[in-house]
Image 1 (cartoon, rainbow, N blue to C red):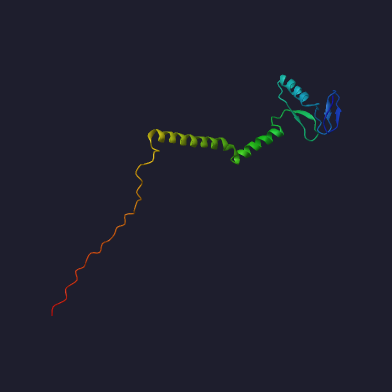
Image 2: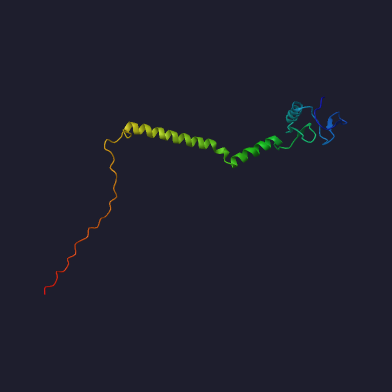
Length: 145
């Protein structure tokens, strides 16, 4: 068995190769570890293969935790959603709706004749200002002497 890892390994009394660092059974590679996990699954024991970062060997665990890389990917997805990057499909759908609405309104205006220019030029609206006309005040005639 060719072991690829950074730690030292030894054989226990039952002929299994064990890691000196963590004292777990060592597997030569991911395929061998996964095959051992599948064999244990046939015996109704759920095991998962993982590479130990401390020693570099492949081991099996019964813990249901996600591997470190999967945990990091999950946290990255959650961070992206929290930062608003997960809403791009919604924004794209909103842009599509606005473009379609503009196209439909242009089509309807064309069919109803609403886009033809008015032959009479628009009259500039003048503000209606109330003008006050001064009323003549009757001045008394000079008194006769």
